[in-house]
Length: 70
Image 1 (cartoon, rainbow, N blue to C red):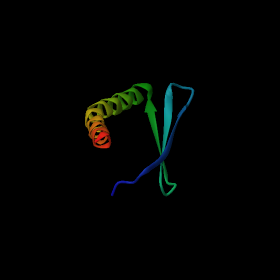
Image 2 (image 1 turned 90 degrees about the vertical axis):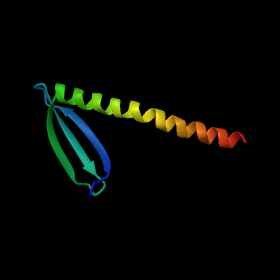
Image 3 (image 1 turned 180 degrees about the vertical axis):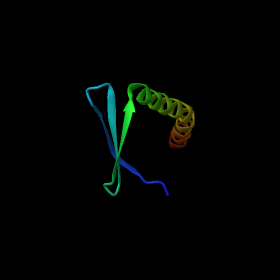
């Protein structure tokens, strides 16, 4: 079962890597060491997903706006 992300932090280690802390709704924290390149790939993947979902989300908003106008 997937857990819900409560918060996250990214901390540079001063040597070119980053520690990514992911905390769930129960307060459990996982730590990952990631390079700049890995974080960049994560950002790209998130942007691609949000861009592909944007059309669906905007279509829902437009449908709601049309319903409100009627």
